[in-house]
Amino acid sequence: QIVLSQSPAILSASPGEKVTMTCRASSSVSYMHWYQQKPGSSPKPWIYATSNLASGVPARFSGSGSGTSYSLTISRVEAEDAATYYCQQWSSNPRTFGGGTKLEIK
Amino acid sequence: EVQLQQSGTVLARPGASVKMSCKASGYSFTSYWMHWVKQRPGQGLEWIGAIYPGNSDTSYNQKFKGKAKLTAVTSASTAYMELSSLTNEDSAVYYCTRGARYFDVWGAGTTVTVSS
Image (cartoon, rainbow over the protein chains, first blue to last red):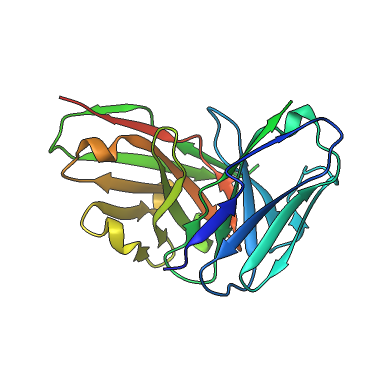
């Protein structure tokens, strides 16, 4: 199966700061999806097919990457962005998720 | 509005089986795969498997074969997952989620607690 490794595990940032989190796949995948999850809530689709923002996602978020390396970037972090972000691959079964990056706001 | 309504919290004994439901509304139930995802307390997300209600085709994560059984009743627009031979490792929140090109709609989750 394709293993997804996310880094860093925990990311601490101040409001207004630019942050990037990465997702590395053990084998090449066609594209990557990202989900946001806040405590006590279901995951929400956030970025799909590597770079497309899901409905309602602020434009300060962006996604990029190809092959085995993908990233999610927030241009200017806001307090509401505090959450755990998971990457996920759809290229092969079993579908797999990364271990998550927890974004903390200082 | 597309929605997935999941059944409530379950408390079960070790060795028992539980069956949970996921009722879909707002879209053609038979046209999308329904996936199930496990999340243990404080842990990440794990894909269990999926069912295509249109023809009942299923796909399982090898890890969950023999543990999870996926079914669907099209007349009720409801998908089900049965977990058997429960152990403490099965205590988790289980989500159903619609599979389009990605997991675009999620249920609120069913919490399963296994305890004697």
